[in-house]
Amino acid sequence: MKPRRVGDVTWEIPQHGDMRVPGRIFASERLLGPIVDERSADQVVNVAHLPGIVEASLAMPDIHWGYGFPIGGVAATRVSDGVVSPGGVGFDICCGVRLLASSFHAADFAEHGDAVMAELDGRIPRGIGKGGIAPASLVGPVLASGAAAAVGAGYGWEEDLARCEETGTSVGADPGVLSEKAIGRGNAQLGSLGAGNHFLEVQAVDEVFDVAAAEVFGIAENMVVVMIHCGSRGLGHQTCTDHVRLMGDAMRRYDITVPDRQLACVPIRSPEGERYLAAMAAASNFAWANRHILAHEARAAFAAGFGMSPEDTGMRLVFDVAHNLAKIETHDVSGEPTRVCVHRKGATRALGPAHPDLPDDLRAMGQPVLIPGSMGTASWVLRGLDENPAFASAAHGAGRVMSRKKAKAQSGGREVRHALEEQGISVRPRSVGLLSEEAPYAYKDVDEVVDVCQRAGLAARVARLRPLGVVKG
Amino acid sequence: MAYTVLAHTADTGIEATADSLAELVADLANGMFAAVGRPHSTGERHTVDLQVATASDPEDLVVDVLSELLYESEVRDMLFSEIVCEPTGDTEWLIHAVGVDNAHVDVSGPPVKAVTYHRLEVRHDSSGWYGRVYLDV
Image: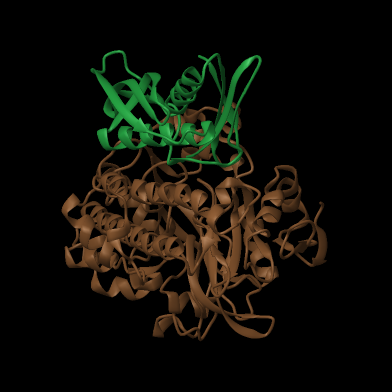
């Protein structure tokens, strides 16, 4: 069923069949075309079948075809009688983005950039089969305490924690419910980037649109910043695998049917549901700590490249925010404050000003919302708004429009590298051949995605960032 | 090569046809690892034998075997190839593979994160077995 326009950038798929709520997509007319063509709108419909879903099955402007849930999907289910679905979080539990400020200007990077990029190249584990920076002995403490355990082991700074969603430690984590396989996969990967669309990027603040918010966030025009995008690695992937399998069997006992097996779900307040949430929280602790350790290494790389101490780099944490999580939150549903489980699968939490979960120094402005662009294009810093129409959620990236297979057929990795270097962007891939899979032409226009976020009231522009150097798997 | 790589906006699909379920599972598994890379001819080859407990339902069986191979390849830091599958009971399979250290692999795609149930299909008809599985990458 074709979505019908119900607002400037809001489209609705009316409730039909066994849908429990309508579907609602935030998109410009241009962005909507591929959303309908590639069947991600069908996945919005499928999610609307989940028991206990409230208001609507929502899609951010960067939505694209996923497995079960669309990437860019948001679904809130009532805690009292709704379900939790691991597919609504994804395999890469707590995948997210971290942004570091610095005391350097873009001109400084022009002088020292080669040295910094060489340091990053040597220090950041990435790609297939590369072990993590941290020892396996830290995995246990990290699963229980997240980024705080990393700080306790000497990675990162204590002050960083206040600038992490959940202060970098997820509530309700129980490492004891993780499988041996999950821990086995994670043991060698703590402090590693992975591959695919994950990256570490050195960027410069290109333009500030909201000076007051930028000041509060600690960024300014021409400042060099570092963006890190990665998640919970094999530990998270295995945790999702384990629980989708378990829930597939459990659904029969709860008499739940879903249109796609990857939407497997159980009641939130069931033993299986509570076990998943405890496992998901432990895996998310791995992810918070993983980004924390990589940030520590990035500081060390800049310190070595500039010939100074990490403290002198001024590389404070702007914010760390997840875009693959399910969280129990309170939102207005039909005018009533209601406890819901907000599944954000490729969607960034975006708390508005005055929210009690924000650190004191950010509360006046709202939460920093970090939206990375595709390789070689702009990334964005936005801020959360009051009256967000998507359970305090916004986009999480540019959103793919082209399969990896098709992207590779369009050009080779060396051509993509050359094109980036022509733009003055230093590229440090582990595998040159894979660069073409992540080429800008494989993604939507991130500026248009951000424009829709602003027009839909999902988040407001603060600053645009331009890439200077890319480290990828 | 008895499999086909399917395009998907975010992920990768593998499709295969075979005369037997055992061949089908092996083809899908070989396709999964071939999507990631190919071992160098100079890499040391390790024989890997795995006993895998699976569901009896063919679709679940495919996910169980591929997920187990994915786990083993990750913790052994190896890429598998030349996979052969052999049922040893209703819910027990013996898997033979050749493993090569990831340091000796020509990478051709991103590592597989997980095996999904999305659009999963395994069926048998008069022409043989057909299977399709999508992988999160």
